[in-house]
Each structure stands twice: as C-alpha cells, then as structure tokens.
Image 1 (cartoon, helix red, strand yellow):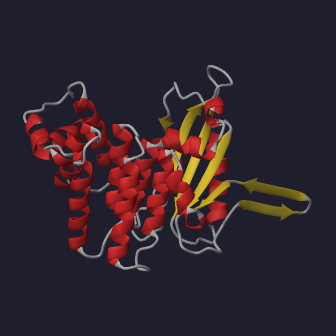
Image 2 (image 1 turned 60 degrees about the vertical axis):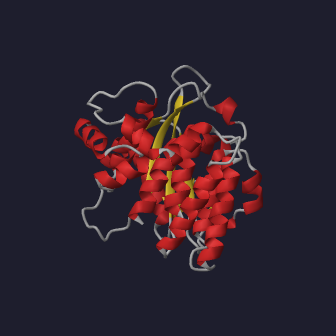
Image 3 (image 1 turned 90 degrees about the vertical axis):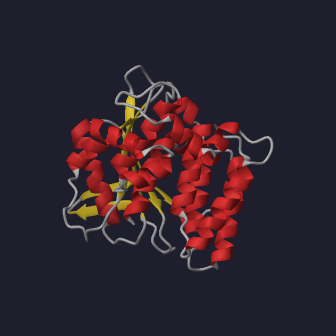
Length: 306
C-alpha cells in the first residue's frame, strides 16, 4: 500500500495537466496552463501531521495551487484524495480537509475522491450534518475506478486515461490468471506507445504501469520486460523512448562523474525524476538508480542536496 501511495503521488504530479483536462471538458478555458502548478505537499502535511504509528491508515492526498484565466492573480486549490479501501469515516475526513484548507488559504477549493477499491457499494459523495435548524452539506467529486469502461478509456487521447486503465488492470489481480494479467498489461503498453504522447509522459506512464500492476511470480516480470524491449525496438517508434528503456548502460556511462549542481538538458530531467523518487518513496539508492537509469553516486548526490 505504501508503494502504491507513492506511485499515485508521483503520477498525479507528472500528469496533473491531463488530470484537469480529463475531468473538465473546458479546462483550457478555466485554467491558465502557462503558469506552473504549485504542489503544496509540505503545507498539507502541516495541516494534517502524519501519525507515527506505522499501522495507521495511509492516504494519498494532493493539494495543488492552480491559476485560472479569471485574472493575473486568480487561483484555486485542487484537493485530490486516492482511497483504496472502504472507510465509514471517509466523507467526514474529506470535510475535515476542506475546512482546514479553507481556513488556511481562504481560496476556492474543488475536491476529488479517486476510489481504487473493489467494493461497488462504497461510493461516498457528501458529508452532511443537521442540528436544530442548521444544515450543512459538503459535496465533492467522486470517481470510482472499477465502474469505468475500459474500451472508452483505451480510445481516449488523454494520458490520464492510461493511468485509470492501469488501475483497472491492477484490480484484476487475483481474479484472473497471471498470464491473462500479463496480456492485459502488454496490451496497455502497446496502446500507450502508439498514442503519440511526448517522451516525459510516456516515461511516467510506463513507470506507473510497470510498478503498479504487480505479478506474484517474477518470471512474468521478465516476460513483460522482454515484451517491452521488443515493442520499443520496433521501427517508427520514438528513439528517445528506446534510449530510455533499452540503452541503460550507455546512459549510465554518460553520468559517471556527475557532481553536485546538475547539468543542462536530459540531466535536468534525471535530477527531477530522482528527486521525486527520494521524496515520495522509501526506495533505497540502488533501487532508485535502477528505476531512473542513473548511477548510485548520482542518487547520493541528489539526496545530499535535498
């Protein structure tokens, strides 16, 4: 669960523009995409300090400052919560987030509950309270992964649809054979590569697909990796993706001797990716180096800086 939480936090950052366009048809008219998103993770942690008890529930939550087209300094807050199990107190917790965030920032808030559980009866939508003539209703956006149509998602040109499809496939684990799960994962990989997304999006989505949909037996991971190599080595595919996945040794060689203070170009992208892994996961340096296709010395230098 902790790894899934980290993966969700990372993919939401990598595809947040797509997230907004996925849920708002008129997103380009509502939001000013020329201005960067501001992820207020540290501020959210201050409002809701984590429980030191390792057995307490873990939640995926993001708070993002998004500029609108209403004016130069007009912005709203987007609160996203990813919930992976039924929770009788979920609606109340969403309201707690709302009033604490509003009390802190005094800005308009839109909230989303992304539900990744398998209980079709669990679909929280609002928090209500009645007391002696006083009535409070807090509604939030609810998106139930298990209810979504995979065919419609597969046809979508929005990268966030691929995130939802990945989550749908993950829900099949234990209900279908490992071979069937592998085939679904490979089909999604092929669909992803053929969508024509830019390199950064494909890298992020590939990482989410590879790590979020897990097999019980390592032999299926090997089969998926082999299929990945074969698909990306086909003619007419983006060379940047092929380099990212297939030419790890060459890229590792390029990065030997990297010092503090990142160089320009692709080194900057590597630095950003490693930084996200360090902040959002509990992976050790060797694991992060493997995921990012960099050296462990590179990871250590980034860790020292942050």
